[in-house]
Length: 245
Image 1 (cartoon, one colour):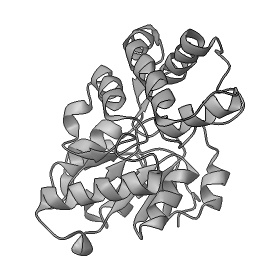
Image 2: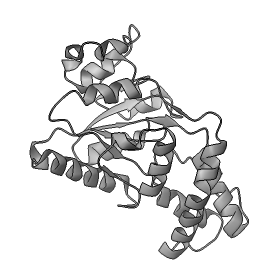
Image 3: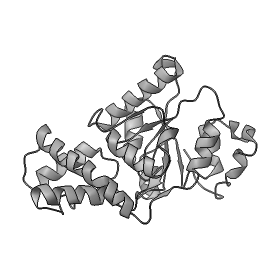
Image 4: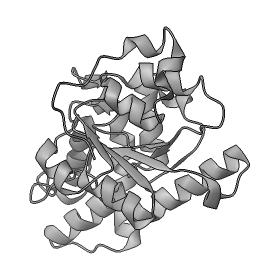
């Protein structure tokens, strides 16, 4: 099970965006470099490369690396200043529940570079929950980094990837597309900035409003969540009439 980070596990109250804007302001005098597009679902390097092009700067690997390094230097500060940073509904109970089952490898599939993911999830006290992942510095392409994450998960299970069921959990249509590109299943959660209708249009295997919904947990575990006793009881039922795919 591969979890996206921003908007799926945590809300960082714009700390990442603030650090990127500040990095561009420091290096290129343009705090508005990312204002012309949505960052939702993009990898860190793809965001920086697109913004460099938009402001008429070189977008080669060295230029991207320079902005990325400054971003990471600034991220701790913007995370400390973020008043609304929080773990999203249902995340901790779900991670607790998944830990009760043998044969499930829980990792990350995020466009954040590894150092950025560690800073964000460390601030939310979640970093230790994930033993592997695919990150934005593994590949700039989201489908490619999801594949890398799945391969690492299969290694953790000591099984061939071909016999593993891989589920990508994310809050954007790009998460769904990355799952589809690899032949994996997708759970879309409308806990981030992307409207539920847009997620439904991407045709995930299942869609929910938050990871606190019992229907989403049952789908992830093929109905086995009820065996978790006290852990499973922390989930609330899905709203009546909530569609799923």
